[in-house]
Image (cartoon, rainbow, N blue to C red; front, side):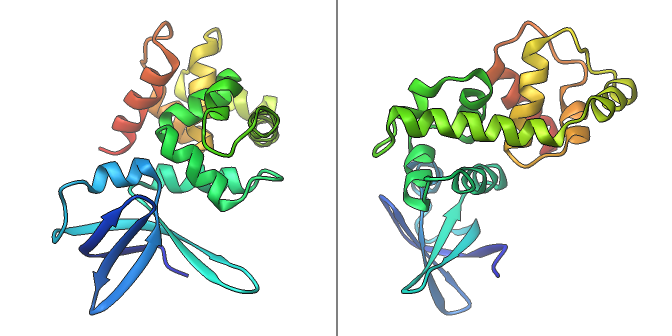
Length: 201
């Protein structure tokens, strides 16, 4: 319903942000990650990408500083047993880049550190999201991407970084473009951050 809301930041505190857009104050549930990016911007014009959750008894608007964080949130709530509050808890603990890297490297312990997230839930997040990404990539389409974009197949880090970018909502083609020429020996999180910087230019 709302793609983003842009306006004056009226309030930003743990879990909540309020933006005045056209005389209407929109209250949004936010992550710690987004709160950090809103720090010191009270009264300034800001933009938050949104997700509207509709339940039988209520509607709740969630706001995110970046499209990548919104995509990570939507990926998380697609996992069975992970609700919106749990997803926000995970994204309060780690940046979208760190979350995507944790999924692709199988780091369930990092995800399980989030408030209200146990080891079993963290393992399920990794299993289901890896499976979801895997279904989107056929060997034929992967071959085409490598041929078209010259993305090395010998580097596990590059492949994991490409998959992590897909967790953040990018297509395989966009991931291949962003990682073209990247150092295959670089740390996974570094690869993801540099690829995102390239995609945002």
